[in-house]
Image (cartoon, rainbow, N blue to C red):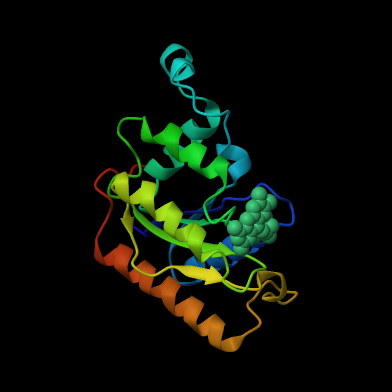
Length: 192
Ligand code: FNR
């Protein structure tokens, strides 16, 4: 069967640049023969992690949904904004909730991280912050990452990257990630 990729932007904003980058990635993954599940932080968002709530009431719907969608995928791609040199609190919160679930769905799941920012460095410091909890949780992080600088000017009307050099680099990286995931075979716990 085709490898399945959960792709989602980690921004809640309607005009999100990371939404555009995630959407571009999803289309490319499909064009390259992968199956895509496009997710939204609106589906995965939750109140701040509270161990008392977790013990008394269990897991809230957002993280439960994220865990279910991860479990049904071989790999995931997150396009995340950089907030204050790190990841948005909502994404970290979702990761914290999901990290308490068993089986823990980040474990041994392949991942590609990307960011988009109007800044000249494209949010790459946030990507390093995001690697830390995901490495800890056992995700198989692709060695390369993609930080889209000046992202407010990077897309044309059709949602493609304007710069041809950057476009080739981006497409090569996504293709490399797909090859890597497929070369590793089906995720041992993938369902669905
Ligand atoms: C930002 N932004 C930002 N950008 C950046 O490159 N480095 C940073 O550390 C920060 N910090 C930051 C903190 C907070 C609280 C906000 C709201 C914003 C700017 C950010 O990259 C920009 O708003 C992006 O457009 C956000 O991504 P989306 O929503 O367009 O996907």
